[in-house]
Length: 206
Image (cartoon, rainbow, N blue to C red):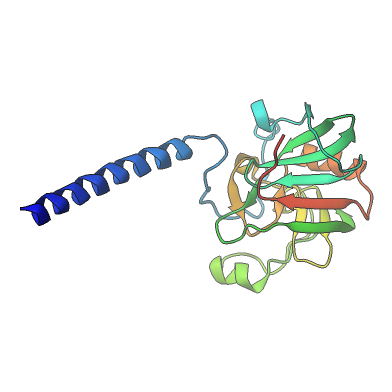
């Protein structure tokens, strides 16, 4: 009898924990900007001006931001889906971004090694293996998945760049790069020089 009661208690506890975990997962899924977006690249697609207009939290804006980093530093919050350009006096310009999907997230310290207007796109072999229909080369332009500008991070394969898929801002969708709508990436590009310090973090405490 004692063994049976103990078994029933364990089963009841397990069911309760499963319900609790499911409720927590559901709450997380409903948090704006935290979901992974299952989309593929669309080389050649040109979004309309209305599609490129962001609203709400992901619209470029000046925000309160406490940091010991100097003005001009870029801090990327991969969990929040934001890029901060430090202004000093506890202020920063905040841009909405798209980040790497599961398995492609990373963190670290880098610098902008070079900058490029309307960059050409050469999908790496790993991307072509996942999406064999992609072109092996695409010249820069409005339909290019790298968008209007690219800022290359150190000696890595990663970039801060524009996008022709503005609907992906606020989502985990890339292969590790950080994407902004074209108006925002042009604005950022014009504000930061080569050599700018870039800090990539999983989360930022405000």
